[in-house]
Image: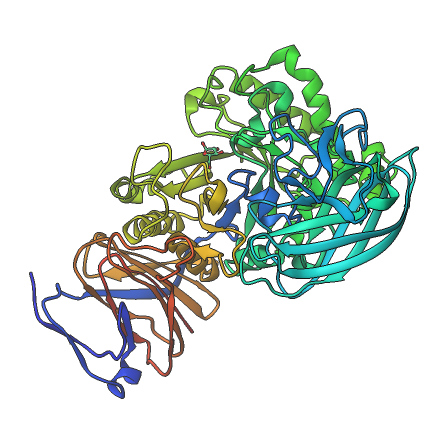
Length: 640
Ligand code: AHR
């Protein structure tokens, strides 16, 4: 039944009014809206809510890591993989450049760049690297390094240069002495000035008159802007800080499909992702480009510590897209897993614990959550998973009884029977908006002794493998409805993560993602789903509260929680009509309302974050709030 309701508001979009405050503000009339919904939040506790509920899932895809959140900016810097050849390299001046596998930089980096200088050259010559479709240059201090072989004593010049403009944003000399007998590494630091676009390249040149008629070799070149928390081989500060602001509670890594490998031999191998980067061979990945593995096991764990996230490490469990190994064939890999465990947890008197200490981490890592495999209900993994799971579970559990385990799927046909106590099951859901909303109740009858993780979820409005390019408001609202369903049951739904996390807009093979970027300044673009994740992760109590309501769920959905005297109410209006929600939270007065609202098909688009959370402060409310929710709006009320 429709009625003309009156609300007090001076705000647009979804509007919240702490009644006492708004009586002092402008009076607004909401015409033609449906009956208000009343919600009375109980102050008494209900279910405990998992502190890890909202986290992130990361895997190397769409250049989320290499050329993405990992700070190193030069592409193809170690000629890893087989497909890139001279991608990103160009000669500077009168030289011939080629990939040279007769001069490997290390056992892992099996080739280098040969720069041949013709006789008679008198100027500075060398080579350029154009990065991952350009190089972002801010006004900052950058670090660079390279390996070099060949007889040369003198100056090396490094520059950051505008590709089209020729403008120089950094110009730095260093003196080197390089010999024919071996590769030597040189490292340097220099200041840069801001470039207004991303079309920049890194140049390394040397005095060609000293080399004419012969050649020099260069390898494993690196360039870093400032990194998150100043960490060496760290994360790109801007992309990492943006993620940190979303307050994720855990990080699931390193995949995803990219853990599995197209073949057994190209699976993600922990032991080739540790130690000096020049000793990491990289690998052919599952997502169409070679991975450098410069973002390796230790870097993931530093990332967790630096963002205060619980690490959730996924282990390769015998399934690749080629072969699947089980039984005795899996045994050697179980030994490898146990070595990985020793690397994480052993003290420095153990072989692998000592290796970890040499790699810069003396104290054992704290990893309490381990997932066995990825999506083993799919791609032929179902039948053998129960045995593979048990083999790995038993080996680790016998030695490390405090670890919590996650099974990679939720299909009981593909799980051990019985599933060992306390093992969490992992569900992955990519759905159309209405389908997410239909799943609102999915966990209401979940057996309370079987915990769940939604290791990956994301709204895709299409069955097309390319997805829709970017989230839109209805889709993000449907995710919010689903998340409200999870949070109501967060005694058993322990963790959830939107996926995939991040894409470089110029290299996308999967859309949408939570946020994206390219090398243009200010290109980092959150999606509407990023805002939902951030709002939800940043506003959650430790206890879910019961709510007395005047209406059933749908189109408005809600969940309330509190920690001590701090209350949170999450709302989503999955419908075409404006809704007024009158909320009573006795004993509360001040706080804020965050609202994300936009027309149904509108969202943020790359480089244009037009839809953003709007936050309003609330004072002296006397515990009563009137919130006007636009169609498809998502809101969080946080008051105490
Ligand atoms: O998130 C993209 C992919 O979707 C993941 O790699 C995989 O686990 C899932 O199928």
